[in-house]
Image 1: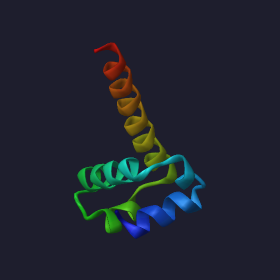
Image 2: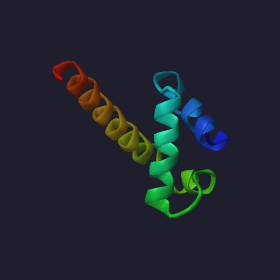
Image 3: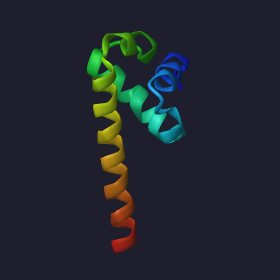
Length: 71
């Protein structure tokens, strides 16, 4: 878990809306999107880019939770 990503989420006032799994996945997506380690790549993304990644994570999780109830 990246300290810089966590600090950025805190500054954006969304840290409390994320859990550890969200932040680990966010680190992975930042690395994938920027091609750099998340501590470096986070500075290349806008707040809106980060929010878009979080929305993607939350959407996937919601779908996964719903599938668990259907099965």
